[in-house]
Length: 436
View 1 (cartoon, rainbow, N blue to C red):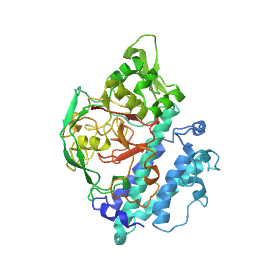
View 2 (view 1 turned 90 degrees about the horizontal axis):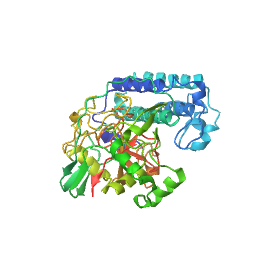
View 3 (view 1 turned 60 degrees about the vertical axis):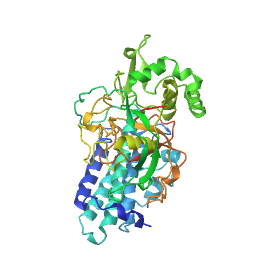
View 4 (view 1 turned 30 degrees about the vertical axis):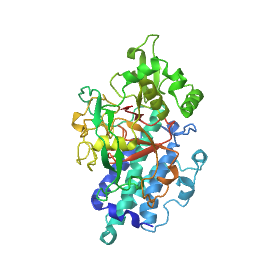
């Protein structure tokens, strides 16, 4: 059952480093929850959120299940945990009616689970080091993903900005036009020496691409506003059948968190909601919280198209095996907007140091980018031990790439495949376009 991941572990961190990473993830989890009032934990039943108390307990449960129970054979810390927190067994809507532990009891569960894991990591596991590291990193990245989801929840519900430290917004220069990517055979996907990877990234394989031109920057608020003010949301021919059905159902006239503040036209007449604050719509920031239908409609209006995920990855890496557009060094605040370093999206012209070999900017961080590709398995796919991660969603979800300002820097690479249903607007999503 567990043998499929063994080849991935050559470059994984030591157990002591894993313990530090897990402690850091838990610190972030608590930071995103500690300031919430009791009434903030009582949320309406919405498709795109979970009850915060359930989400916190689920984070502890997932880590406990894979690292203490699966690896160590220990009994559950909470006898009823499987009936409360197993996301594969408990339907989304049922999570509002569960007899969840109280806030204090949930935090105590988080503390007990982490303490037990750290004790386990302090012991000698040289006899099975690869297996040990794999499951602790699985728990780490799962918690990182739920930390990002906690930011989405706070935005969706209009809660105050989380108390995360922020850097000053970076300097920017305008990345003009398209970058040319020549035709050829390129390699995409994860390599066996990449360290931890998820099953949907495996394995590297060649793709044949025609030459294409891809925008050097994501679509900006200013560019998207031109589509809005030209009646783009009311013009049927720009929308797919599914997209038009979504627009009719939601009555959308503009991105979900935009509002017009006056009767005039132009960027000065609009604002965007960022958590609980309305801020000016800044022309050179990427449009954000748009779904795949909106991205497709904009492309139809502009005479452009979305990149396929293979095109996106090749434009990001040059197809030469690098982990990031700039090389193999990990992300830093001068190369990408990740880890909530800047607290929001920034100008699309920031981070020239993060450009790809083809001169494409911000392919890591700032906003997740919709692609034209359905979420499908790579050739030879086989599920890893956490079978529910990818396989249930093939064919129903679409691929996003690159990470957002809300994404932990250690989680994302240029090969990381995110996937959501095309109607989702709660995710920190934008897009870039290709010439037709």
